[in-house]
Length: 451
Image (cartoon, rainbow, N blue to C red):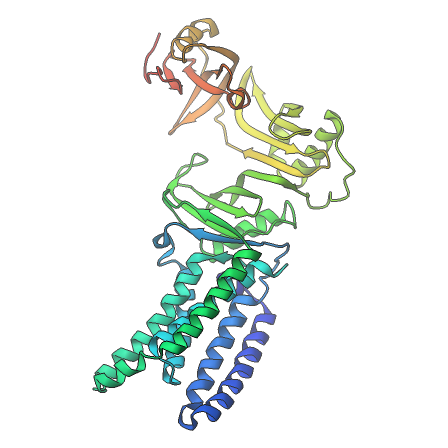
């Protein structure tokens, strides 16, 4: 992707000038050899290719790691109109325009630019440490840019009353197209063998993040680890559950992802199948006990999440989702009521971060009193759970529903024989002030029933 390279990078300026100059000279010499009258068009085409190569292959600032993945989006329209999409279109429009001016057919110009874009995308995924992402939307935008350049030339030719025969002849060159098609096939096969293809379902209302959003995500993740290489950042167009008017940024990499609220760019969730080494703790020897897990969590809280130190309870248990991992949970309790403050982190045996949940919510000074007993609330809850299920843990907690705060009884249950739900139990919430059922995930749950 090309948006990140427009940060202040002296290397980019050097590479843009050098590559465009070198390829412009090569194009001039080629044009002089092939057709004396077209040498300047060939020089401009070479300069355009040089700029495209420098802009897309310059290492992104602060990049690290190895990607090895190519993202194939199922919905191209989600990125149309974004900053990155427009830059990708504009980047290849001169390539298509000047190749055609140099004497290539319209179809050949677009095919050459498309092949070049494909090669660039696969190279981005293959080069270690370059910090760039292989994305099908970039490839499509580049191809559209080249097509736009040739269309502009056709329009100019028509406005200048160029003979239609000349335009038709310029679109020929079947032998050249066959050669280019063969080259494109070789590039595609080589790229598919060297990259992992990841398909993205874009049915949810999300769009590509801007360069400022990508930068905010990168800085936030760098504070946790310098080994995370983000390959894609998207933003939801719907408000999230973390704050009024805020949306969710989703950053993805090869073996994990993270969610942030926007515009404050606070991380709320992180997950990694292989784990990531924490910044400053890469030499950690391992975690063999609850005490060691708590110590590592305390270091993480002190350096990155100081608000979690307000917790009144810290517990550590084995995490059934990750073999041999430890899950440390921070909670705050006031007058027997669990506050919305929540921080939980999972470490592997060797101290790598596997999962993180962070929610810092400002609570009111006065907490709504619990007027309904646990026994009475249980009667409502038990009548709204699936058959063959039973209520287990019960907690009195403070939640925010819209603009209102409620003290609720939180009952949980798991289906018999469902191991996944035993780890992520289903909640049934009953208002501790009114006895109203607020939330039940069972098939018989009826919102709004009361005692």
